[in-house]
Amino acid sequence: MKKLSYKKKLIIFDLDGVIIDSKINMRFAWQAVNKRFKLRVSFEKYFNHIGKPFNKILNDLKIYKDTRDIEKEYSRASIRNIKKIKLYKDVKKTFKYLKKNKIKTAIVTSKSLDRTKKILRIFKIRVDELQCPSKKLRGKPFPDQILKVISKANIKRKNCIYLGDTKFDSIASKKSKIDFALASYGYKIGIKKSKINIKNIFQIKKFI
Image 1: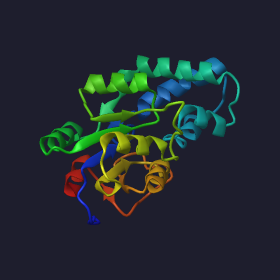
Image 2: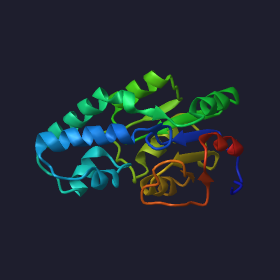
Image 3: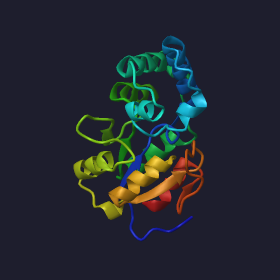
């Protein structure tokens, strides 16, 4: 594993594919959307875009009609099947360790705020900063959400690292001028390896 020049004081996590395994949940939600709106777009095609804001995914899939209703239906179906979401191994152990060592934590995700908060409540995960899609901020792969979190945490960029599992996470990190670590146990959408690869979330402790 690559050694970094600076110790990290802020660990920023993606959510899906890094903290939680929600692929089955997403499949059920997308199937519900497909059925109601007769989209005829496979889950595999949808899943390849995971990491971007939902409306951006629809646009890239050339779905331009009923987008607000589609997003609402997806959210409802996701919440109905929320029990199908699981934590990855050692997630709670990792957050406990970081808190004990006074390392700030944040989540930057393209998942909606209401669903993210519900999931974090269910699994009893607490972070110092949480940034979900906002009308005022561009979503990944743009750096806006990451930069907002760094600003609020008041930590220098050299002391920050983003743990993600998609090429959109990697690009957003690069544009934010912070280190990126690939959660190789996650979905690895559009990316197979990185300069820093994390096989288990608890390995992030090596950078603090």
